[in-house]
Length: 120
Image 1 (cartoon, rainbow, N blue to C red):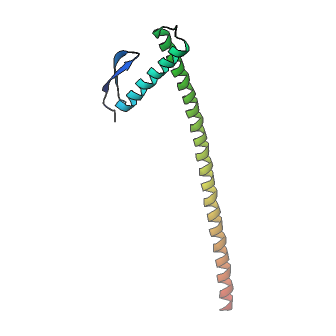
Image 2: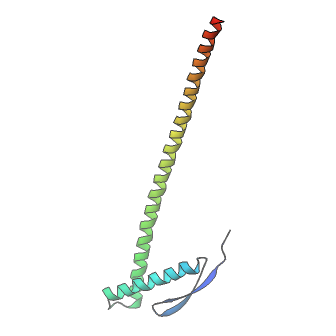
Image 3: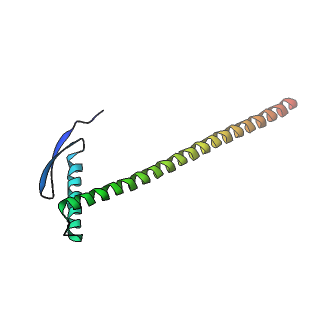
């Protein structure tokens, strides 16, 4: 089900923007806070940069972080798939082992039954 789009007013570097999206107000407030914090950090590091240069650097950092997170996610998904395959293999082995034990027990009971029949 698609979420309804919402409007969020954010003040970034002193300018107000209206952002339209499906994220919660809390999510967008966190985004707004992080952007302003990172812009302030860039101001401290390189005060001679223009706002446009700072925003470009902020975008570069954001995309770089996104790529790192996507790579981590892909690796985690691959590890999860491996674990699921191993689990399925172990479950199959366990079922086969239980079947084998049940068949062995059945043979033992049949042999025991035959021995008791001879005594009767």
